[in-house]
Image 1 (cartoon, chains in turn cyan, orange):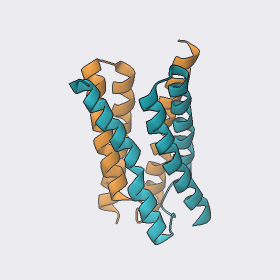
Image 2 (cartoon, chains in turn purple, red; image 1 turned 30 degrees about the vertical axis):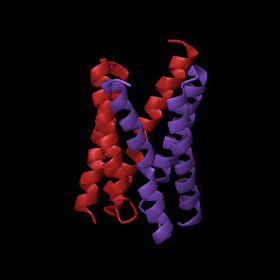
Image 3 (cartoon, chains in turn yellow, orange; image 1 turned 180 degrees about the vertical axis):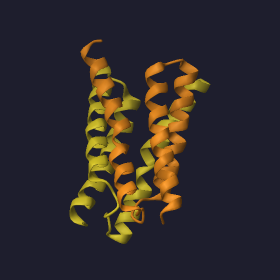
Image 4 (cartoon, chains in turn yellow, green; image 1 turned 120 degrees about the horizontal axis):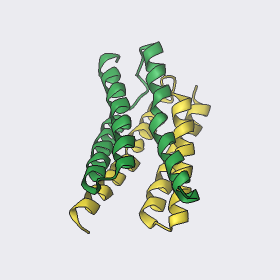
Length: 84
Length: 84
């Protein structure tokens, strides 16, 4: 793994795990008033398309990162619907 | 542009513009209580790394998408600091 690949790998880890603190926050507060449903719906559509892109290219890092992100985004969306 | 490239392009557009509804929502409500600072800080670090990755590869789509995303994320972060 060269320097550029390491940068890309750490970038993917950051943009994937970043949603964990948001999941934890909602889990604790049960409040989602300030969170935009539109943001998470459009982001979810984007992640599904990234996952499709990864599957078409058979690119494992894209597939893994977007599967984890999709799971976290769907959790936040289910919280948004459950806790108004 | 083949089918796979179109999927990747639409995916990038979605995950980039998704932050616009969140910016608009905070602009209207002036409230960011439910938004996780940790999420946007880690995501911001990730986007800076993606931008670095794009610059290292001289890949214009990655550079453009992440520059726009960085601008939107920094806007949300400045709102988060301004409106508690």
